Image (cartoon, rainbow over all chains, first blue to last red; front, side):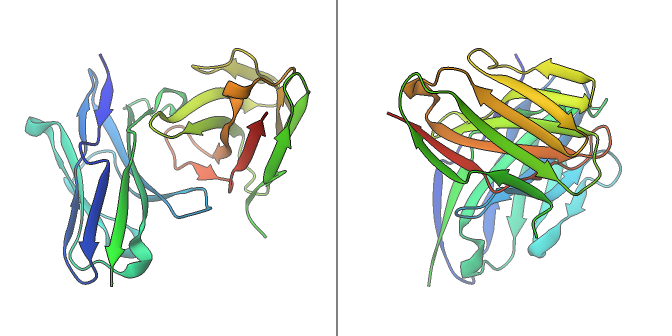
Length: 115
Length: 112
């Protein structure tokens, strides 16, 4: 079955610390992979995406993610977290046909940042 | 102004009432979507439309209907609201197949 797992429901880090949010997927076809962020009271915003090519992708707000096919993972990283990064983070996977109606979403990881 | 605008942002209603959530966009995108977000259940697709004459059911369309009035407008209706439709609803658009989704700020609906 196709699925996306974000193992960590909630993470707390100190401001300035590094961050890694995990995303594992199960998908039969070549995946398109996305990370979205939802700030409090806001809609979701795309952080970054992987379609093909370099497996380390750079996104907005200083985030990056690495696609590891052998591990079926697409973990999100940031070297130094800012208080404004406190938000909900969602990983999603779609087919290489790129049809958004077939996007499979993870349940999200809530990030809290301590001053 | 936001590229994807949802109205109302918050609504409290009673069981059995008809509710319409409206979405308008200035992105010029053909593709529009309605999602529902519930704690612990993530985002689930209700309906999607790839152009004005194309309407498709998502994974949880029962109890909902939609109308694509124009390229820029996509409305979600609950004909007879029930408490388990209490949720945060998002409209989204995308411009190309597999492209980025642009979300509105959400409409929080409470059905008493």
